[in-house]
Image 1 (cartoon, one colour):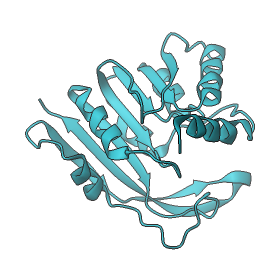
Image 2 (tube, rainbow, N blue to C red; image 1 turned 90 degrees about the vertical axis):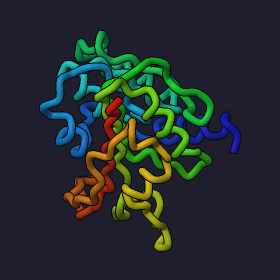
Image 3 (cartoon, rainbow, N blue to C red; image 1 turned 60 degrees about the horizontal axis):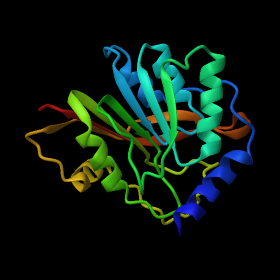
Length: 208
């Protein structure tokens, strides 16, 4: 699928649903970041913007990117409405083609899954390389299929966090895996429906 088709696909996904009024942060982000000194953060695939807005409220300066212009425009409007525009910078990036510039203390990639072509390992490897020493890359993937997921393929396979880490092929002398686990939680989906889901959580720290 071409870049143009991918952009159209994700613009349609966001345009077809109401804009989030008060997007919530992901649970794995809040539990990981609480207690860390604020710095510069990069949110890959920012979506509705709950993570970026929460980080900004905690004092982080956030670069939030998504392939969808609809998503980043909506997030920019939310940041302005909450007087957080000085802490949230939005930009449209097709991570298959371009990557945000700069160095970061925190990079988060929550559920960076797509039915389209994406060399995810290359994206996450690029993210690891723009961490500052001491910075962390937080990758949170689906570990199970929620009842409301767009992908209900019974044969779908969710790579374990250690497998994802191995695929990044990072030098252990420079990057350390701080967490690789599969915790469960109760998630809330459309219409308030709840279900127990598994997250695959990988946290990598740049040590040098």
